[in-house]
Length: 260
Image 1: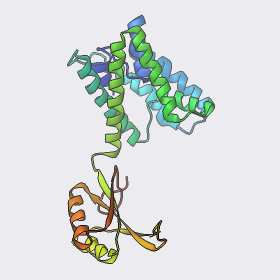
Image 2: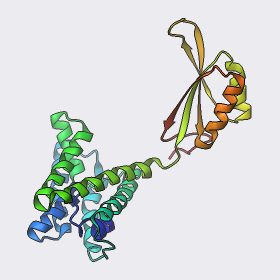
Image 3: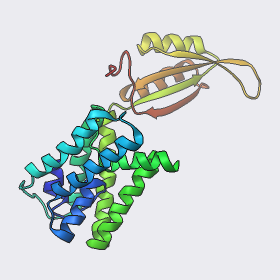
């Protein structure tokens, strides 16, 4: 995160939100080292959260609040590979997203405005996601005032890339499909899935909304490369079968991803 901040975002005056974005804006106004600004904001916010929210976020938030600015300070002289603001927003967003994704997978925290958002959420009733958006939005608006509106637009691109990269790190690329199958030949389809496709399934009890008759609904999760085989098998048994396919981001359990 610190390397991406120093090599892409800060040199190109792109504030993507958070305390790091505030430090970029303040550096432009006062010349203060971003790491100093981050410490000056992170530590009071952490203490305020400790007082108002209790200590449930624990030691990891305290460590993140101190260590991230230290890493920013240590990497402050890292090279700047591009001065193209679009490239900087995209690759800076990817780098920060990778770092945050790793932190979140370790159930850690970098402190800062994330804790401030939790305080706002608790005392106003606003959703946590909206509370985070409020603070990030204020940082990006301030960058438009201090830099240019164009810089703020690049900051929004960087923020979007960061959030998507966090999702990838936490969930991965192992997308799968979940299928719900309703058929008058459920027993034959069940055997085809179990023995030809070599996948398990779950049978759910349902009833027709119009007829009121009891129906068996088969639920099966398959990998992307098994979707065509599943559809072919179902069609070969019952061309009139009703099949619902939807995407699922993560599947934990036998045949897929192990529990962390």
